[in-house]
Length: 159
Image (cartoon, rainbow, N blue to C red; front, side):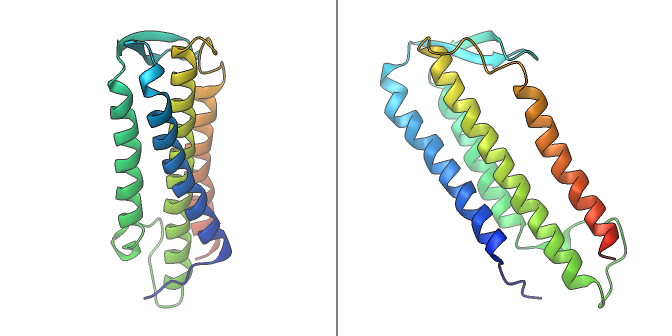
């Protein structure tokens, strides 16, 4: 079954791709100006509490890029997903469209969160910020879990 992209789909794809490109770009631009040791871990309050070589920044970028690519591939196989309800001929297209939109939304949310993490790590490293911010972990969890919950609820409503 071929699911056509909507304006929302295209918008999320553009935002996600822009996030990945921005993350790579700010890392490339700032890498040489970073101190040799940068924060690589932040506690629940967003304060740095673990440090390592600045090359670790590329691991964060690689993880974000890897997730982006993996989720982009995954969204092409909605018939392989696990669903909360039985898929029938009557609800299949609606359920597949919802599932693809969920993956696309999660991909975009993860990308934007990784972009912020990369940006904030660079800013903390050069002394322009003191941490990620008190609510950064909460925002990450709410956006990810909220997206999953919203699309799970939509799945029931679309059955």
